Length: 318
Image (cartoon, rainbow, N blue to C red; front, side):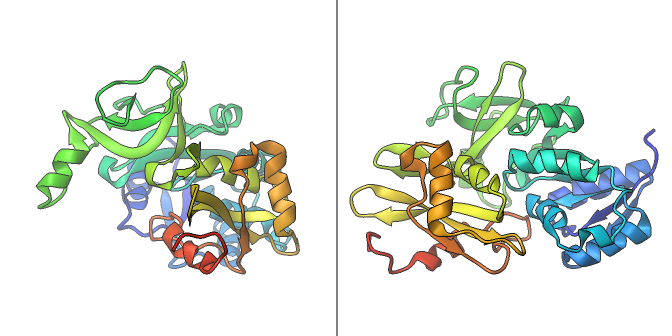
């Protein structure tokens, strides 16, 4: 059996990640689980030092805030062995920095409420070698990539909708027979995520289908642009959203939170993206916010709430 560890979490227990992946694992291994009512980076570092915490995490923003905090050197965080997260795409730069600056092993995974959290798991050397992947499926799960109509399974490497199957899949939605029939098909759950699988079965989440931006017929995957923004030394939190446009349908725009003590301009970040990606993927506008981006209890960014930051911008459709 694994040796008991001390783990710190601020994820609410009504979320499957905390309840299933977190608490049940801690109980099974006899580990100590420390709860924070609300995330605060300074308070977290105090707890890590005092309780000799071995593992923490939740969403990528938590890891970024620990890495970027100006007072980090004041605390002894050497007990950390692992920093894991899910709920949102993470940048390859984050994976590297967790390992090089904390000496801890990064970890992530993919799952959803309908799958009781973890369907894939990714950690340690595998994650360092494939930092853009969500990992392979757990032993009891199967994954496949389907076309938009849900009829044809796509070849390895092609992007389509991710379907998952396994004993952890729920039976359906309570008192919602139509939604259940549309989402659960012959033991598979249609996830609504756009993804691909490589030759070894590792999963790569490309975007939520509803978050994909279509500009003049060209697909823009928000996670691809967000990962480039995260690689900028000043960016600690960001999101790409689609703005309605009269002729193009949509245009990409970014909302960014900068690390303490850093600065960047809209033009600088636009040029940064343009250096790494095609011109049509560059955000047409960038808005800066003082706080980290708003999230729901599951750690997912509330992208709909961000669109109000661009209201009245020239070119937006009415």
